[in-house]
Image 1 (cartoon, one colour):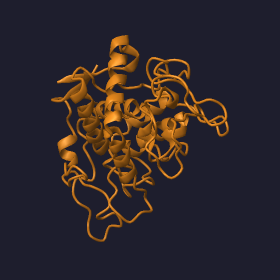
Image 2 (cartoon, rainbow, N blue to C red):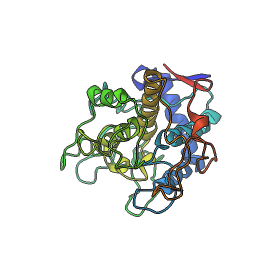
Image 3 (cartoon, rainbow, N blue to C red):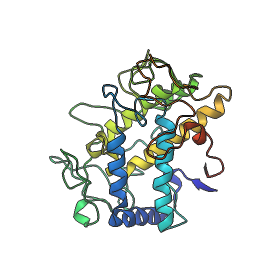
Amino acid sequence: MYSRKNQRDLTRTERRRFVDAVLTIKRSGRYDDFVAMHREFYVTDGEDRPRAAHMTPSFFPWHRQYLLEFEQALRETDPAVSVPYWDWTLDRSPGGPPWTPDFLGGNGREGDRQVTTGPFAHREGNWSLSNGVTDGLFLTRDFGRPADPVALPTAGDVQKALDDPLYDAEPWNSLSRTGFRNRVEGWGVRGARAISNHNQVHRWVGGAMAGAGSPNDPVFWLHHAFIDRLWDRWQRAHPGSGYLPARGLAGDDPQHGRVFARNEPLPPWEIAPSRLLDHSRVYRYA
């Protein structure tokens, strides 16, 4: 078993080794494969096909396995490396960690929003984006989206989600009006603003993080490690609550064949959510 640390607690050597491992799998082409996978499985409510990764109860287990696959690729390069987490309720300054020049680099410059600092700046020669239809070659960020301002979520926002004892609820998508899953994923629930938590952070970072190709920005992994940690915290706080739906939906349910019940295998790994509920034999959060 290994540990995932808060990025603010990484030593200088640990930061360097994480960056080096990410750059190594980028050079091999494997990093861009992870970006392509996220694009493929970013399926929205309006699409009439299985929805495993977003706007769905399997948001947490799908991303847990996705993160594990990425982490395994890093550890094949350097067994001492794991994915750190970014607690954005604590580290909220655009000039502080994780945005330092020796780690993830900073905000994009005015105009084209290109990141010009840190090891993932395009001009360093190590980081070109895996292109989608609208992406350029360089990593972009737009902290806080000054043209349409958004703030990072607060500890209070997180606590509201953690306090909900229900995992998820009908209609099992972005319109679910209660439940921990949608309160964290952040599509908007009763009594909340339009976006929150997970989605709000993607928008705050902006640039490459704002679309289906969001893993093009390495902060994606730190963000989702924190989301995974929140799921762990919720499970500990509500031991009597479990993953929902527990059983496959009836054939006449609008979400039949589109969302995944507890024991229905998730693509592309064919691993059911029930097998991803406990990570304690693989890693822990420091």
